[in-house]
Length: 282
Image (cartoon, rainbow, N blue to C red):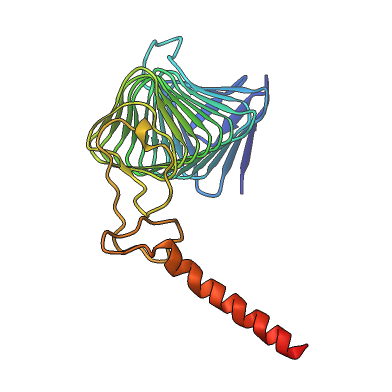
């Protein structure tokens, strides 16, 4: 296994694919290939700039800054990151997709900051967010986006796959759901409405903003929802094929509630018999 560690002001060459110099630079004419089993580590306090192409089939560990940007020499917008391996962003790490295209068919695990500034992100794999995603340009989710942290969407969040929100999403721009969105956290639409062309299931979460299009389906498995009035639009509940539901359910129309004397008289009779048997023992 090879391990690539970028240290400030140290000249390192990786294979024959490209040269990496100073703080870590992939130029617009270069391609960095990380084979399966190899690891690229960007240490805390280290900056890594990509103006060219990176093909990752192994592992990239980011504890510093990883940024796609414009090549200052050629002024070419051609940074491309293709990940079919694993990208792990540590607590001190940050990906700033400033000018580039990031395509993920593998796994991205974010414990730091993922900023989709002026670039584009296409997730065709698994993206697990445990901390912070800032989106200012198109972010397309075609597979699995699992949010346990915080997502701030300024513009262009498109969910065409499965978005499972257990954290917080604040929507200030275009948010289109044409896939499936599971919400057990908080989704707050501050400025723009959420355009729903797919399915949104709300599991004891909160959606106080506006949802246009297909109505939100609240409580699909019969759990208590709380304040459903905070969801704009028609709300439907489906309790089909549900077993072992312990929540309090409303009585059916054909069930008669016994009157007070009918309930009390048997209890009084039982207490009287108990008192009589106790006297006989004495």
